[in-house]
Length: 186
Image 1: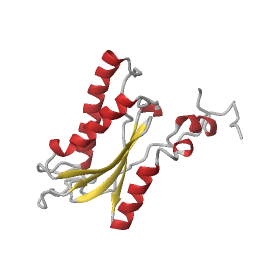
Image 2: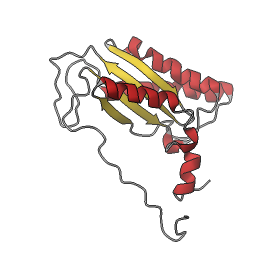
Image 3: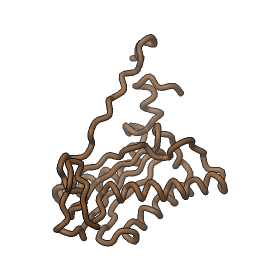
Image 4: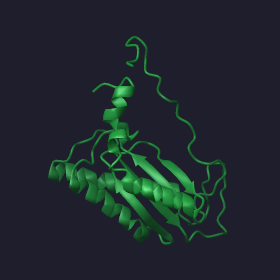
């Protein structure tokens, strides 16, 4: 059913996504989803997806003590699993946002570096390979994360990631589908 054209869209309010007081540098596996800004489909072409995947695979080279697991690049988002295994147990959060003092990388720092590097290389693809241009930022401001608590959870998430391309038509991140259910312009 279409929304009333005279009423503004009821868009969700921004909320805190991180677990309050949790140390995101501690050893654990984390499932993340990072979306492009406004869910624009910048990664429709194979070259762009390969670029994003290559940078994902280089994360362990940048940060000692982390490993990447399953990952899928969709037209406007990425799902992946990052395991932090080499965190210094002496590093503890120094505030309610889970930020640490010390040298252990936090999940947020890892995602920030990933977003920065992919943006820089994507810009080169726009200039040199005629990729879809963007204005402002390539990625949305935040990202979704889930702390993986056990092997059952890990295996379900791996399966979800592997099956994501098959389920694209019904994916909540598919902006074409979302435009129909929210009052977004074409």
